[in-house]
Image (cartoon, rainbow, N blue to C red; front, side, top):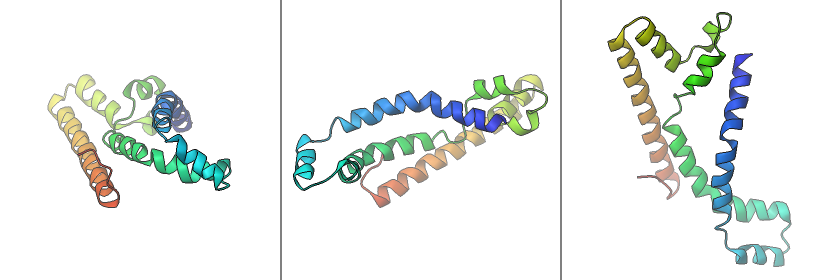
Length: 142
């Protein structure tokens, strides 16, 4: 029961900021594209499909690449606050495991190794997503 609550709260938490980003991307759409599509007989759904989505696709790709850099980093505070003795085996994530090992068991070197491994995997995902994006389209971060 913890996973659906966590994912719903995660989507709700980032919904506002992502809406601001996408609305800013939509504000850069040239008005003449809308007018030309309406003259050609495009309806509202066709405007979304052929004007809006292609215009905001580079923004979507950049946000995907940036989010791939933190794919294994879940909200530590949220998970820790939702944990209790009954759901601990099902709600343990890398961040809370590192906390348990490092600060509660005083195994600092092992906890540092776990954190470094987590960071390297996230960095690999970031590089891979950027490389795929650069190969498929001309949109990339570096």
